Image 1 (cartoon, protein in one colour):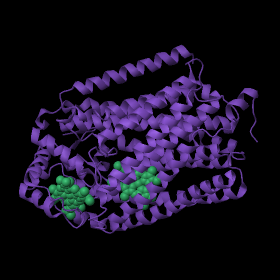
Image 2 (cartoon, rainbow over the protein chains, first blue to last red):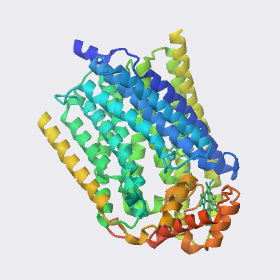
Image 3 (cartoon, rainbow over the protein chains, first blue to last red):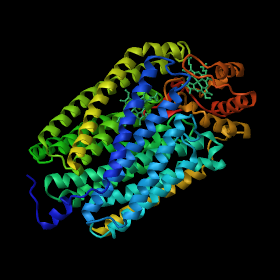
Image 4 (cartoon, rainbow over the protein chains, first blue to last red):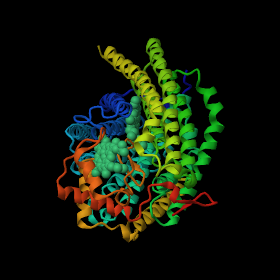
Length: 450
Length: 132
Ligand code: HEM
């Protein structure tokens, strides 16, 4: 059982609200879309030319990636809205909250439909026409107003409140920054254009991670029954370290561009400070497992632990890729994809799901068993999925470095087939695991309603 | 940690971040790469057709197709045109008209000016950094 310190704690952490649930429902559907389009894309790797004329990779990839990004953003907004309503008793404005949701839904639906018809105009990750960024920006401004007004002031706030405030603002700034290409002065020099593009993306991911990691600290407080951590010096030190990295560590995307060398050094040096985060995770490993194990929040807890494992794997890979001498090999290969999907599935999605279980208040044994089974299937398959991409990446790295001019691209891709096949099969199994989790969640809620 | 210190650290970081950002906005990046009006149209076409879903430039993009950073200097214009016309067993035929092909070629040319696709052309230094 949770040991609650006092009435205040109870009020702050066991407020049972349904704020954010409509965000989460749509987000979960987007998660299922992500899986479907991901599998389709992987099939196109294994069967070259599949659906070449009607539904080829230039449609499937953005459908997959945008569904993934919107699953993460929409559920993160839902969770932050929910937790904020818990902490503060209620949100500042219900109207803004509803309008944020409507704008998101309209934008996301239009974006996905436009991809189906092959209407693009944006760039990687935001391939839709720039006009569709307007509802997203507006929705996000509503979100910022609601977050700041609900919080009220800076005085003596726990670290997760700082993280939410930072996350919402940085997301907006970097999202706007990623549209600077609309101005010719930014667009017409390809090196400048790509530098600013990847600068903004690097920080943007840091921005949504602030929302997600902040929520996980809130949830850990709730599970452990004490708020000691979220007011501690170490929590704030790590928050500032994270912020520092979000601001300056994005250079690894563009090491190979003709940019001034100090950009490389800044990013390289800043990324190495992440070793401190890594050290802390390993140090905390045992204690976090022992204390929370028998808890009432077992499902959320299991997903938090799963995410912890993936934080470790992803950070190891990320730190390696931040060293230019290693990046020169990994850049342009599927190792990058392994890193991105490892992070968005293993860390972001697992953490977000752990918040969802908490918000949906799942305590029925049978539901817990089914979801746990889904988690184990996903975890095992995800590891093979990730390894397949890394092996394919290593082979491609070797080709890029040593046989670029002698072995044609098509021949090289052919030799990677076995790893693409294991990637596909593991991806399908992982998707089944995630499907079981999402389906059980839906079922649980429908039953609870009736 | 008192609120004062936190706000102070936050403002310090924000100052550095925005300073660095605006500095990078103003920086004069390799002028060899400055695109002509034709290349600029090519870039927009590249985005409108989402070539980047399968192709990388400077190693960035999707990975189903090859990196095209240096395609301009390694292949002829006719070669590029032929691919765009017929496609491959994976790449759809885009049926671009002649002026659209010239735009794409101009765009690829502006990238080729300094871009390096083959990493073996970069030097690895002892401190772990890389140089062109
Ligand atoms: C929650 C589940 C998933 C999330 C959040 C996710 C996210 C992503 C992201 C962010 C990318 C872009 C990678 C990059 O640019 O570096 C990507 C690419 C991709 N994903 Fe996933 N993914 C998921 C599941 C899957 C599954 C189950 C499969 C297949 C079985 C899959 C197949 C692919 C493929 C083929 C690509 C494109 C690789 C390329 O660029 O050539 N994904 N995914």
